[in-house]
Each structure stands twice: as structure tokens, then as C-alpha cells.
Image 1 (cartoon, helix red, strand yellow):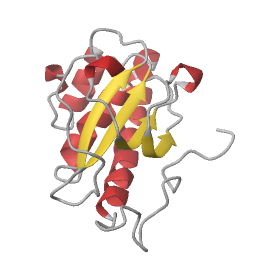
Image 2 (tube, one colour):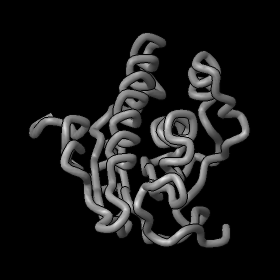
Image 3 (cartoon, helix red, strand yellow):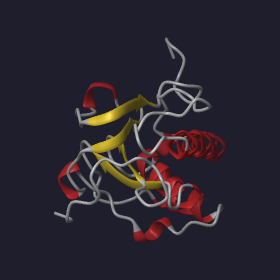
Length: 170
């Protein structure tokens, strides 16, 4: 198991906010979210991803879709929760896995109700990828707005259930 990382952080440049993206297989959605968090949130987020029932491999379509936007996902592997550092986390983002998503302790929790793109046509796969990127960008903005002394969103920050959270009912 990897060594534990930072304690729960403030999201400041010296202590990036720890975020865990969880889906079922850790082969598509959570892998893409971790990759975008690394691309877009350098110095702001310390991202990890895991699956409740890992597939064992990252979907080659996810690798190709991330290569299109300049990220090499081929270095990632499908992981279980036992393979990521233990909490606490600042954010845990579940990705449409419903009851299959385990409870992981975090200050903020979000569920991004996104379809698993593995069986979608190319346009659908890319739409899910692009939506994940948009939501990660929102998460980066919220983490960057954390006040170091209180660890709470600043006055201009969106709430943890802000615009990036899915609307009720779907």
C-alpha cells in the first residue's frame, strides 16, 4: 500500500487538497477525472482514483481519449481502495456508481452521476470525457478558493454541491 500522504489540507499551494475519485472499475470515469485533476489542478489538488470492483486495466479507449487532450493515461493502472493512500480526504467524488460506491471519509462529498462510457459510441465517450473535465475544472476552482485558516470555501467559492453537482432526479 502507498505511504500516507498529506493530512487533510487547505487547498493552498503548499498543501494541495486531497481528492479521491471513485467509480466501479477504475477503468474510465475515475481514471479520466484523476488525469484531468493532475492536468488542471497541479499544486491545488492531490488526486487519486480507485474502483469498488477494479477491472485490473485502464480501458484503451480512455487512454486514447486522454491522449487526444495531451495526457498519457497509459502509465495509470486500475486500482482498488486498498491501493490508494488512506484518508482523510478533502473531497471524495463518486462517479455514478450508486450503491456500489463505498463510503470513504471526506470533508466534502460529491456524486457526479455520469454514465459509464465503456460501451458508448465515440461521440458519447468524448462527451463524458469533456463533462468530467468541466467538473474537474469546477472542483479545482473550489479547492483553490479554500481559506487556509478555516479550510472552508471563501466568499466567492461555489458550495460543495454547487454548479458541478448533478440536479436532483438526474
